[in-house]
Structure formats: structure tokens, C-alpha cells
Image (tube, rainbow, N blue to C red):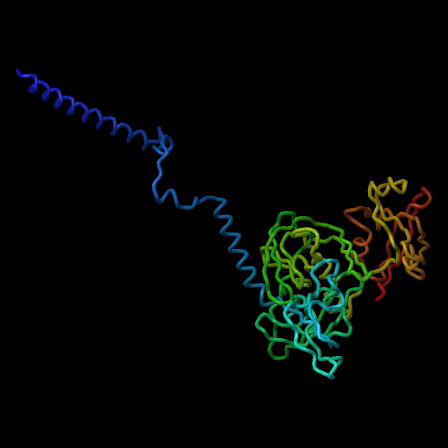
Length: 424
């Protein structure tokens, strides 16, 4: 037998054996994979196809992202018809450019912001002194009652010489009447008469006390008094902030329990709603820090609810009043002032004569509260950084009789006080 013939036979036999062994191995492997005794080949080898390489990964994170975006779109679509722009008009005596509104950046926050576009030359005498009413600023607001009650910031409508108009999301414009300004908080209620074209869409007021740090929020407003119903989105980055506001003209205000957010609140957003993903208002946008990036503040809607109820009931915003000037005691203040306690409200006078510790004739004065007294509790509820005196009082009504626990000269005493009405 020749060598070539022998080699051919060997190759044929080897091929047959290989096919048999390979087939048996494939059958055995298929059985093991199908019964779950071994995993798929992707677990042991890196197998990539063009489709697999380019398709986005699907999973809980992707699903959450899609759901949140969908919720945001739904909230904006539902809320926008109830968000309004407030236009501020005033007689201008000379040609002007830029912001001429008297509150030039309230607390360095979102103020009634004059539009940046050029204004028409005022009509009048040859010297240009006599003028016509023109837009000098603007802010935001939102409808809280279908017959035209609108909530906004006090500083948006605080100029008695200005006229105000409300522009709805559908471009209809109505003259606005300022019904009430909150004497204590940066809130105001205005009213428009829509006649037979009502009722108007309203926003649902939520529970700001349930707000959580990290919760997604949406701000809507008249950004830069030029871009109506601008939407920004972020999270709650802080709660119960105490913010001291100044308008650059010597006037100041304290925002208690402010909600801090990184949703951009631009000039002109003042008075607009801060919404949760359920479409409920949890705050009234008020301020943005000029120095910080994306640090804005909103007044909790729990405070705003009281203002609305008061206007409907009394025709004005009524707030309870004690009549003391105080500092919230902290560990640092207690150490600096050598105070015997590290909590409470320390009654002190201010740096100017007008800032008295106890207002003459006030409920505090009538109850014999004095400078350097420390109020430890109101009706048994402790006063501290998280629960300042103003917040405890805000939950009462004028005429309510409360019991103060006061520390004077190292001794505690109970004092009965009948709260008054905050003076306008």
C-alpha cells in the first residue's frame, strides 16, 4: 500500500472521529445551558455586535430618568396656564435705559426687573421732561382662586406710584389691583377681573412642611421680565433657612424657614411658583444670591396659605404681633454674650435708635417684657434655631392669649401675653 493512500485513510478516519466528538460535545453543552447548569457564552467571552455596541443600556436608572422627565413635562404643561406675568408701568420723566425700578435688586434676589430692550422716547415737552407710562419692571405670580386672586411677592407690587397689569399665558392682559401686602413677609395678593371669560385655571397648594432635601422641584416665571413662563428645574438644597434680605436702600427683611433650591431663579421670577413633581406649589420664589451660583430661596407655601385665607376672610393680610426685637440664641452667640443658655430668643435693641428692644405700647410692652429677657418657650414649645420665635407666633392669630417662658436675671417665669395685630 502506498504512503499517500495510507495518509488519506488516516485523514478520513480523523475527520469522522472529530465530527462525532464535536457533535456529542455540542449536544452536551446545549443540555447544560438549557438546564441552567452553566451560563451563556457572554459570561465567559466578550462578544460585541454593532447593535449591542451602540444601543443604550436599559435598566432601573434609565427608567427612572424617563419617568422623571415625563413627570416634569406633565407638571409644566398643567401648571403654565395658571402662572402669570406681572408688568409694572410708571410715568418716566426722561429717556431711560436699563432698570429704573426703585427696588434695584431686592435682597440681591429676583426682583421686579426692568427689561433690557430699549424703551421708546417719552412723549411730551420739547425738553423731554413730561413722559408717558412705560414698562419699568416686572415679576411673576400664580392664580390661587379661579375668580382672579393672584399671589406674588410684595416687592413686585410695592411702588404706590406704579400701575400693574397681569398677562396670562394665552397673552390676554388685565389691569391688576393690589388687594393686600403682607406686613411681615414678602407676599402680596392682587386681583384681576376677567368677567365672563372666567373661571381661571388655578394651582394646587401643597404642604411645604413635607418637603425634603434632594426633592426635585420646578420653578416657572417671567425671567428677566422678557421671557414669560420660563421653566427651570433643580432640587431642594436646603430647608428652614433664615435669610436676611436687603434692597440696597437701607431697608431689610427676614425670610423665615426659606426653602433653598438650585433651580435657577432669575430676576423677574419673583412671585412665581416652586412646584414639586406632583404639580403642587410648595413655595413662592423670592430670592437668588448674586454671589452664589444657583442658590435661590422660596417662601414656604404654608406661610402663603395664611395670607390668602386672611385676604378672603378680612380683606387684608392679618398677622399676629408680639412687638419685640430679638436675636436667635446659638452656641456661638451664647458664648460671645456670656448668656446662661444656648437656646431661646434674646431681646435686644438694634444699632440705631429706632430699633428698640420692646416696641412701646405693643403686646410685649403691656406684658412687661424687657430688654435682655430671654424667651425660652411659647405655650410650652421650645424656642431655638429650628423653631424661632417668629415662626411660633406666626401660627397664632391676633387676640390669642399665649404663655411665654421667660428667663430674667437667671430665674424662669411664666408671662401671659395677648397677641396684637401686626401694624401696617
